[in-house]
Length: 131
Image (cartoon, rainbow, N blue to C red; front, side, top):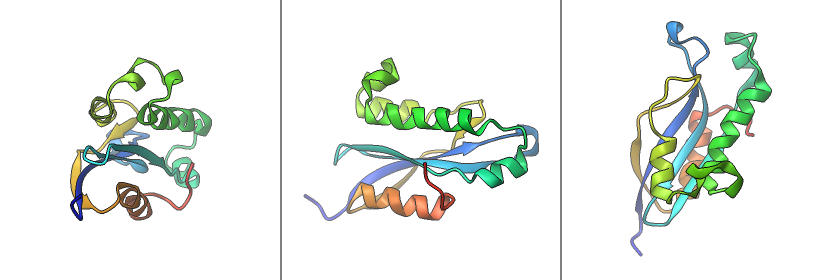
């Protein structure tokens, strides 16, 4: 096995008011085809969400974000998308959306461990609070 594997990642963003062009990073999706790894980590800075969007339903947002985790994990209760291959699930999860939860463009990198890459990206891009 090579020292490093390529991986792709995208950032989940909450966009409370699209006209203000503000967003809050809320999760990271990491996919490494070579090591058969697909995972989503979430982190929601609730005080920041409430500051930008006082009427936000945090429970609903958490539920919607957790659906990304269930789909990535292939949870049978997460619907038909969760039954697709890892590659298909990643590209479905990372597809552009026009909802309150949007996804960044896909970025690439190299890593020794995709789990460590996910943890590093979360530390860098998300609030300290994890779901």
